[in-house]
Structures are given as structure tokens and as C-alpha cells.
Image (tube, rainbow over all chains, first blue to last red; front, side, top):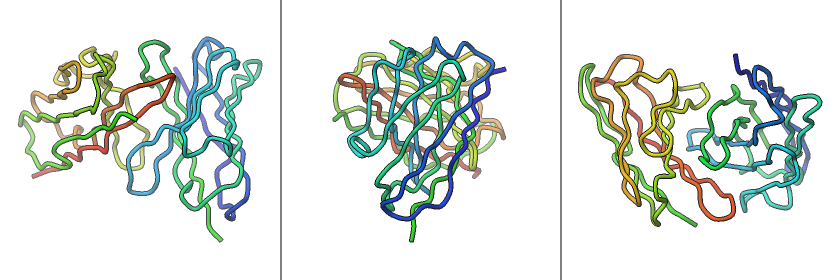
Length: 119
Length: 108
């Protein structure tokens, strides 16, 4: 059974940093591109970032480019999102999701972790 | 950027009803259009990929159609567990993803 388990969310002040993790199991993690997708309270889904299976290529939404860094450790089956210079508008539930390359859909999702940016 | 719209933004329906949700993109995305279901407090769940392919394990009452800029998600006979929000998603450019604003389906 595929499982994606996010952790690392919490309350942080504006300008602060946070690192999210996503532990994967039940599939060959190193063969999958992975992504982060967020959802602000009461709002729709917003793609944040994607990393390819090897970790060599990364992609970011304009809203987080230069502030967030996606990475992965295939030896640990873990995906990360380093979030710096956080703003109130980054407040959201952050989901990790596996991405099917070339068909471009997110087939498995974690349960999400809440990030709240507030003073 | 490719803009996405969904209609309606919400609808009320009864168990057994046929429900149709439309997603429209501002540019041609061929068949690169996917549909997700999300229930309150839960993660999204993939229903349809590549416009019309049913994800494994998803009931056959769900179907998708369309290509280019106009797409449709149909639930042939609404069941109690189908009350949720439905969102479309597409890909463009080097690698950017956009989700539609969502259509909330609730009980009449």
C-alpha cells in the first residue's frame, strides 16, 4: 500500500523558516517524480514545486521561487521542502504527492501538514 | 499562464442524479486534463487522468470527456459518498501545474 506521510508543519512567524518532510513507502520512491501542493484555508489547490526522480531537476511556482527549495533523499525514501522567508500568504495545508511523468497527474497524496505563518 | 475555470462553482443534487461539471482552459491543453475529488479535511483523490482515463479503483459511474479547451466530468448516478469538491488540473510550459477553482457538490 502506498503511503506518504508529511511532517514538520507548525506555527512560524513571518520571515521565519520551516522544513517539511514526506516519508514514502509502498512504492519505488526513486522511480517517481514528487511534488508539493498546498491549499490555503477555504481555497483551492495550488501547485508549489516538483522534483524529478533523480533529484537533478526542480521546478517552482512563481509565488515561491527563490524562497522554497525542494529536495529528496532516495536512500531514505524522503521528500523535503525547505521554506524560507515565510509570509502570511504561505499559510496552508501542504500535501506531498507522487507525479506520473509525461502524463502529468498526481496519483497518490499524503494527508497533509498545516503551516501557519503568523505573529 | 493558462487560466482555468470550472462551472458551476457549486451545485445541489440528490442521490441518483446525473451530475456534469465543466472545466475550461484558456489555451489548448490537448488531453492533458485530470480530475480530483476532495472531501473536507482529506487529501485530494485522483479520479480521471488524460481527460477520460479512469484511475484504478474509481467507480465506473465517474467518466471524463473533452479535449483542447473544454472538458467534462460526469457522475452518472450520484451516490452519498460522492458529495465532495471536484477540481480539474492541467500542465503547461516547462513544468507548471494549475488547478481549477473547484466545484462543490452537496446534498439537495
